[in-house]
Image (tube, rainbow, N blue to C red):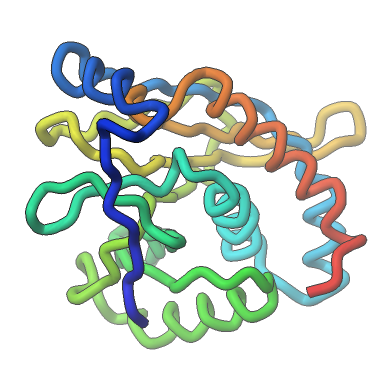
Length: 217
């Protein structure tokens, strides 16, 4: 699938001066963890015979793709670009040997289509124990820790401080006051997003989960 993007003119971009200040002086990554109520999502996937992991990946992918601040990257000439859409790069864990496969499933706006793509990609790569080669460049990172319900989770990307895409993680969901609550974390570069954008992500994830059984896919 073709990777489409728009080159960003930083001098004409409304956030251009803020972006340059952070990239030139303070390369900061913000991290936030919020408990999300996934009760409605669990009911939805049971009723539709879906798996939780790809369904939750679709939820966060849907919200990420709704906002420009999560779709910035660099082209091969180090020009700032904004992807038309980005797809999740996720870890498929293999409990039999405690290793994983890292791969990208191309995003679809339809949860059922994305779920089918995910299951096909998972099956095709089930014997790999590595980062799958020749993956799309328009990606963000997502993973989960289904064994533990944590309070906070932070991922440090040890590059030159210019990885702009979100890094999203969630933990184990547990019942609290008759609701299934799950910790959800996002790391995002401050050059492209602020606390407002970070907060909106969690608000819209919850809204999407709460309304998912009312949508036509």
